Image (cartoon, one colour):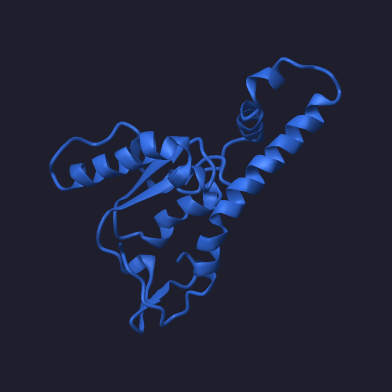
Length: 169
């Protein structure tokens, strides 16, 4: 979308064509859609207000992780109600002004801290030289299982072509 747009029924749609406010959900430790790339939406959709919901989560964690049901989805729903005039602006949602649109992603220390916090509690207190290897293997197994569960979706996305019909449901 940031580079070329999306073709829907033989019509090219770009972010510059949008006329309604946008809520951008940013995973501050997302390695697939890094924060600066997501925030670039501010320049691409310059005619509309752009809001941001920034959460300490990875790409899949935003929509299927433990915080998705408790934070992401309810906050998005609250934002929609607010934009419809049925509530107040959610506390976690901020307007993205032009000058912060390309702010750097979370620092490496923050990413390492987030990764380190994934370890089971019983491993955190250990200091033996083999615990780092166990933690790494455990993290790889966990990430592999998560990725494997998402493969069917990724395969379907890979087959989307310009004439593919897409449902909003």
